[in-house]
Image (spheres, rainbow, N blue to C red):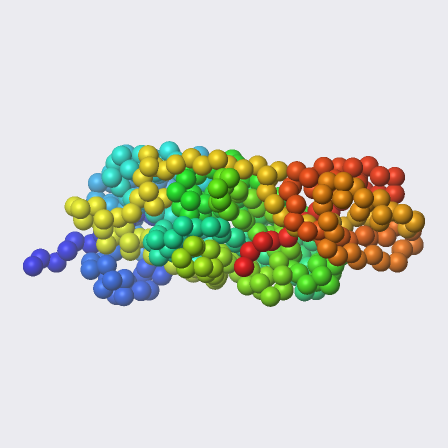
Length: 438
C-alpha cells in the first residue's frame, strides 16, 4: 500500500493566531501525522509584511504578500484564513470555496455576519468550513455542541466568552478598582485593543453567541437580533452591593429556546456566588450548556492567545485533513445541518424576556422616597425581594439598591421610566438582570 501524500495547506495571516498554529503544527508534527495518517505540510503563507519577526519557522514556507496566490495554487488542499475582518476575509473565503478548497478560520465576525452565505456556498461546493477557533479560544465548545451533545435538545447556553471584559470585571470586583483604570491596564497587558469597543460594549461576545445559538438551536445565524449591552457603566459600588447580596457581576452571553421562541442577549448579569459561572475569573472563558438529557455541563479554559486559539485551529485542520479524500463525505456541515435545512424560529425581543432585577437608584434622603418607588413597581406587578439603603453622603444623595422578583422586561422598563422622572431621583437608574442559570 503506497504512502498517502501530505495534506498541503496555505495560511493567510501570520500574526498571533497564524504564527501560533504553525508553530504548534511544526512542534507536534509527528503526533499530528500519526493522528491524521499522513503529514500536514504548510507550503505557503501570506502576510502584509514579509520581514516581520514571526512566532514560527518560515524558512521552508513560500511567503507572499498576495493571499490569492495561495487560493489559486492547485496543490493546496486547505486554506487557513486568520486575518480577521469581514471584507477581504469574506472575499478570500468565498474564493477558496469556489476553488474547491476547504477552509479553517478563527474569524467570529465573518462567521456571525456572513456565515449563512458562506455555508450555503460550502454546502453547494461540498467543502468544509471549520471555525472552532472563532468562539472561546482553546475551548472545544463548537464540537461539544455539534457532536457530543447532538442527541440533546439544548434548553439554553450561557457564557463568559470575552476575556477582556471578564478580566476587567474580575479586577473591579476583587479590588474595588474603577472601570477606566482596569481598562488601561488591560490595554497595557495586551488583553484589550487600542480601540476596545468590540470587547467592552459586547459586540465580540454577540458575534460568538450568534454562532453558538445557530448550532445549538438548528437555526440560521442571527447576529443582527442579539440584544447587546456593554460593561462601561458598571461601578465598584455595584460590585460591592452585588457581593453583599450574594452575587458576582459577570458579562454573560445567553441564548435560550422555549415554546415562545429564541432569546439572544449579551449584557451584565448578577450571578450567585455558588454558581459555576460566577467563579470564572481573569481572562478565562466558560460556557454553560444545558441539554434535556445531559443536564448542565460547563466548558472552561483560555479564551484567546497564540497557544489556545492555535490549538483550536489545529483541531479543525486535523478533522478536515482526516476527511479530505473521503468520497462518502462523512464531515458534518459547518453549522451541524445544511443551511437549507435550518429553520428560522421566532426571535424574541429583549422586552419579552423574564428576569429578576437589580436596581441602583440615587435618591434624595427624604421621607417617602422608597415608598413611592415601591408603589410604582407594585403598579407594574413587580415585587421587591430585598433592599439596601445607605446613610446620606455629603451631597445628601443616597444609593437605594433593590432586588426584585421575576418580571418581564417590558414591565420593568415601564416602571424604570417613571422612577427616573421622580423629583427625588437623581440621574439614571442602574438596572442589571439577574442570571437564571444553574
